[in-house]
Amino acid sequence: MAIEVRIPTILRNLTDGAKAVEGKGDTLDELFTDLDTRHPGLRDRLVDDKGLRKFVNVYLNDEDVRFLGGLDTQVADGDNVTVLPAVAGG
Amino acid sequence: MLTIERALVEKIIAHARADHPDEACGIIAGPVGSDRPVRYVAMVNAERSPTFYRFDSQEQLKVWREMDDRDEEPVVIYHSHTATEAYPSRTDISYASEPDAHYVLVSTREEDDTEFRSFRIVDGEVSEEEVTIVDAFEA
Picture 1 (cartoon, rainbow over the protein chains, first blue to last red):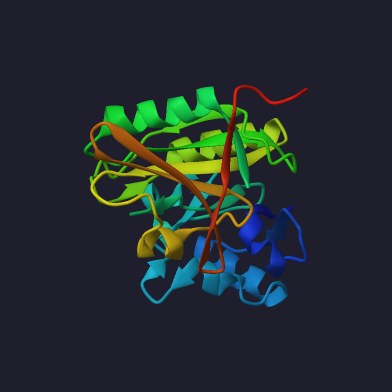
Picture 2 (picture 1 turned 135 degrees about the horizontal axis):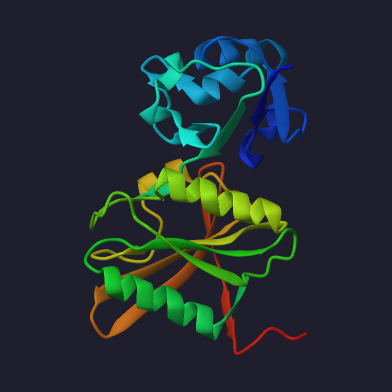
């Protein structure tokens, strides 16, 4: 078992085109660090020194993790994580 | 070039006018790879602002899932400018994340005339494209 992470089109250059990848960890932070070992650069596109990047939406089982615990959100085998770039502008 | 049906152009303009002076936003989905905008989806501007827009994250997930299930993609991503021209702002360019989408901008700054323009935004580079409005797609 693992945690499935769905990757948006714009980041698939970091996953060899894969729409979804798998990883492990007890928190979102650990999961992203784990993914980065196989998909270098991915973590940097999701996280900056202040936490989750402002214009990236991350969902755990369809809940926006901003309303859960951000990077400290607990994750477990069998969970589904979805990454979507926010659609925003001025 | 963006080819789009007149009825969809009218829907975008009506949405922009209805939400003025706040920015309105939404998408038109179409079959993956078709470059044809077909299914109009007005989105909530979670910012409810005259100078900024952002899709509501929960609504975005729902709409993106629906597109996945139907083998669609966001062919058009539109939003309005309510006091400036229909040209991508610096923030529009920095947050643009769909290199295959037509970014449509409308401006509602003039009461009786609505600018309607389309752009590609790829790697921070903006290029305007021609818009062809048709009554209906040829079968």
